[in-house]
Length: 120
Length: 488
Image (cartoon, rainbow over all chains, first blue to last red; front, top):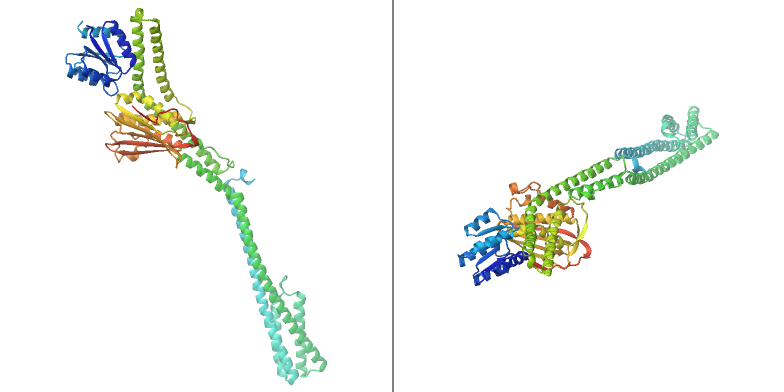
């Protein structure tokens, strides 16, 4: 059965492209532009991997990371961000972030990181 | 005319000289009049005495003829001689030319009296008066009293006519003084006051910061006020230049803050384009024609997004002429919010717009008002460390014909004791983060637009800045399809 990945980013194009690329790699991908809806989805169902943007309206990437850690401690989270401040990075590391990608994201590196995170 | 070349100094001197001449003339006239009256009164007194003496002489004369009493003639001679001496000595009081006795009348009177007294003397000497002599004495005596009575009446009439003439002249003098004052006012002082009025208006404009409206008005050349007015105009020009420099530096300061936000804002579309390109390359063989077209379409949309961000920033930073444009308040708010969108997002500030429908247009220099708004937004964001709410409301005050725009934050607020200083130049509470010019420049901009900027603040509750700008008269702008309520 294909591994399930949830992608959360308020930029629709990021969601669309990530879905396209990761589906081509054989994963099952769900995308959310609205982080609130994404959080609700995560609460209702576990995913194998979470890829989320850091800065978002309402629910931030950090909130998602904390919620995933709380509900599914073994699920890994990859974070994308256009502006990573040192504080945010330290906080993310303390919350056991798996990987951190500054935007613009290099797809090959993201693919590698996803593969590694899912233990393939 | 007078106003073309005469300096104020000359005008005042000329006016003073004219006034002095008029006053001297009037005084001289008064002096002459009173002097004449005085002489006349003395003359009347003399003639009155003469008249009484003559009557007494006649009485003595009659006594003599009735009772043949020689002592009466003696008495008569004494009175007559005394009177004759007085009359002879009083020539200068009596013969005074225009209003006085004529020389002929005077000598006639004197001559008659002399003759009369000679006849009396003769009678006294002879101790009797023959009938022809008696007749002559009686006739002469009668003539003398007649003459003196006529002269007395005439002199009295003359005095009364001189007095009424003086009275008329006094009124005429008042009229002349009045007319001269009117003429002086018309040709000398009215312009001075007008020109001072112009100066006053110019200084008021300068004090209100409306420098560009201060222009040299039509004022007589080579006039002292012209020099002062020119100096005010020069000062206004210089102040305007300085203020523009100040505004530009204030703008550059906000620009420094904006630029990091804008750089981040550019990150998203750049990342999108990068992702599209990478996906396009790596999945090229798997993509259908339609999908490829869509990808390129997305790239175009994202590049347009970048263009818009850059344009908005450039628009703000450019030093533009202060062209007044009829503008929608809502548009200005939207464009200014666009510039700080990223700051809002990073600082977790949510904004709420409440722009009334059918707001009238305002005639403003859009980039300047935008500068004020951006400044207020940045201040608000900086006052809300850790996030907050920003309320932006615009409404129309029909009574004052003003558009009111308020920017309210839920930040730390401003301490009461520093509230009165926040619009002062170089006043800052942000130490290295601020220049202290932001609000001062904003204040200047709003004043230049004939508006007002007010502040209310409660420590720990937040701060509200209210901008009031005059609405364009009788012109309701279209609503620009803007939503009445919009939150983010």
